[in-house]
Image (tube, rainbow over all chains, first blue to last red; front, side):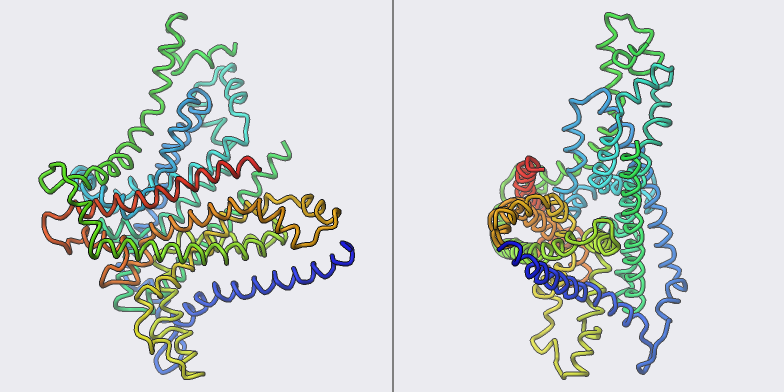
Length: 266
Length: 305
């Protein structure tokens, strides 16, 4: 019975699988095609690349792109500086604090960004008073937003190495804690750190809620503003953003894989 | 010697400590390492959150009051909450069903193949980093001058907007939200599908069970908790989402996040600022409950893996 039923099931399964892939594939690719079509519309049903070349002709847009890239780098660095020593230290010396740090890192998932911004507004009055109102001050809140993603990536990285033994070996050979961190922990969880950074960069480049409500002109805020007067241009930039984030995450899938391979080899 | 690892904390300082006092002094120093992280998170996450939660119970002079919360229970605010919950629930269910199907189609393929990489990376972009670009993708597709709108008009004479400007209202939000809900489902549900062992299927078959038997008595029950958990996560995700809706709807505030925008951009009466914080408290409660149950389900699921 089972033997005769098997090929039939395999075929129905394969057909259903392809139906699902094709239908949902169209559902998700269609908007991207539409963006490509819309952003290359010229006058009188002609094709034109004006919207795309217009990206670099708009000084406000170029400024906001630079701002967002700077924010992405600064937030990733701040996230690494805050998380890596703390998480490594907790695994080595203060396991009791692990639940608390995990809770704090995952908390941004439960506090919607729009709610966080309500509480941030008075805080940012102080930040801007002390540090000036540069959009780069958004780094502080972005480092918080990326915590859940970064925590999970780094935690997985730390779990994949025998941190305690490595640290004890280094310490018994006379290494300071700083050396242990910089020359033992960081190189061993390199791929996890790259993963956490890529996720942070993608998140910061896509962030809109907090920047727009605190009145800072980042990339997404600018894209939204442009949308009100030049739909073609805003759609071209939107498509570029989506493609860029896709490339980052696609690279990430290879980073994660390489880590697994090295673990097996060890 | 290996001893320093367990007794000393800050290099030379702890080495100089007397052996008897070592552990306590070491512990104090050990705690110091965590202080920057705790201070930072305290300032930029915990403090603003407390500010919102406490503000919900204060009037404009800072005195304790429950009037913000009672105001929330009526009129436009209550309507916005119901509409947000409705939007989140519908898109969570749609996202969960179609996302589960897509996950299944991907999980049955090569685990390191190109298809899976493309789908997972694409899902990550749309689910977590889309925001504003998604709103414009939606407009380019079914907006007034959109690709599909024009195609249907030119080829079949179908006017998508004969029923009104639905794309800027709840039906439009529902459609655009599924663009990030289905991908999020793929991200959270794919690991659960990967956890199904091929041996279970083989065992079912060798005992004479059909595909239906397998899903009815083995696969289905195992996937039930992760599926339910994913629905809750998707609900919380849609309920918290702001960017896509804000870029799409520039006038009016049909859902709670957009109403909070009104309070932040000063579109409300003076002296009512704390009503915005009460809306925030309401959102935290709704999202918190969904995420809390999600965490409980996760704990149950992890026993299986």
